[in-house]
Length: 138
Ligand code: NI
Image (cartoon, rainbow, N blue to C red; front, side, top):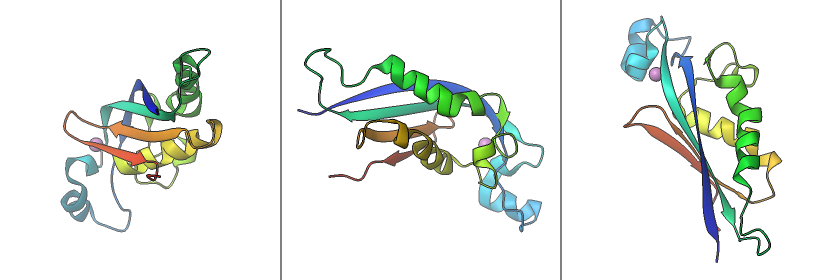
């Protein structure tokens, strides 16, 4: 019987959502308050879920300390207290929406986990808004 295990991490980061070819007014129409040219920050919540079978010897699916270490090493250390538009080498040129972040974070983690184990990466920007990238259903 497969189980799902989730690790939650928090980080603070600044961003501005915009397309450089649009005016500030057009960007405001598309991206709302997140397009503010002076930038702003969010207290992000990142959830990473892995799925698979319980190891009968440990009772674990995957050691959450190991998962936490991986999330910190591959993501949090680079994005915490960063400006996502300029400070993070592997996010350069990306528009840092929650959708783009969830997808980019997935790509940062997936090669470092046992094959097929990553199930869901969720990036929560506010109490009411989040985005998730999910493994394709089997
Ligand atoms: Ni924003």
